[in-house]
Image 1 (cartoon, rainbow, N blue to C red):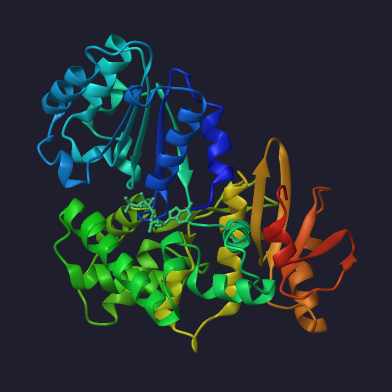
Image 2: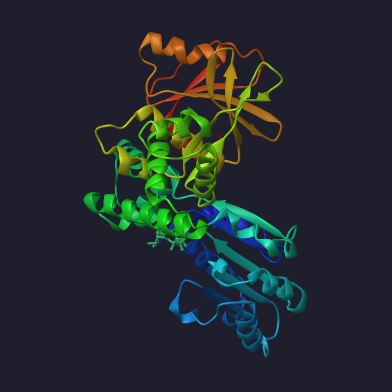
Length: 401
Ligand SMILES: Nc1ncnc2c1ncn2[C@@H]1O[C@H](COP(=O)(O)OP(=O)(O)OP(=O)(O)O)[C@@H](O)[C@H]1O
């Protein structure tokens, strides 16, 4: 197991703070392993193991703990005779009914520090969420980044060519569990994971009735990542296939998929007109592996994939992102962090002069002095009119873009 330093550093700073630490993220991105790494950190600090209580509600061991009363009975019996602070780590807490009531009472009645995980962004939006609102801090996890993939092979002492590794990352993405499998099995792993999310986290959880429509919508969105659409335009497209639907249904299904962390929805802004937000949005995937299962190796649109990978790295690095529109041109990403703005275009290659002109054109139209970049797979140094070219691998390897 590699240490997820990026997330651990954030969490370690929060140990012993009052807030409940909430770790969310798509299924199988590594939340359980991270909880175990937090436990290691607590033990390294000399905390007695009996004061650390880890419970995974996916495990049959706790199948009898179904609601807040069951959980309270268990926790109070376990902690009755303990001295000192107690560390509670609950994996997939949403399986326990009214869990918010329990956590709220532990905060008051026990000297404790609490960590929870969940794979749905609605974890903290149920009716009882107000009990802990304002008393938690959440950390959203993603599958492995390219840097973490390099770290993984380094720690395995496996020499691997960086370009080959990048190609592997482009195709299969960064779900950590994939690394236990060979190529053909990777596809199956991704497909099984995708199906579990669609069935359990979207269909059953939201009582979706039309599985066929849901599957068609997901396939459409995954194949069209990084393209502009609205619920109306998708609804029209799907109706053209002789299926019944409404924009309202499409909006609901897309929300469910976002809540399961499959997609990120990004707004579009007009850079010139006072940054006004526009109607249609873009969607990006939580991991490019899911693109692969629908688009195989032959039909892949590399620019789309690169854009998705750049997007993921930007949100990992804490940027908030919109898509930019300037006159009739698009700027792929407008990135904001701490009063700074950066503009980014992503292109497979800018070796061809016409492509280069096209990619630079929208950035050249922006008159402010914030930094502007074009990221591509090319590996030459190039800058013109204040626009800097970056190689994608260098970009992904940078600690602080
Ligand atoms: N840091 C890591 N290093 C190596 N492998 C990892 C790491 N983190 C996770 N994995 C592997 O990825 C898989 C999924 O990890 P994990 O169970 O922690 O994910 P999860 O987010 O808790 O999943 P779920 O939401 O389904 O409970 C496991 O096979 C695990 O071994």
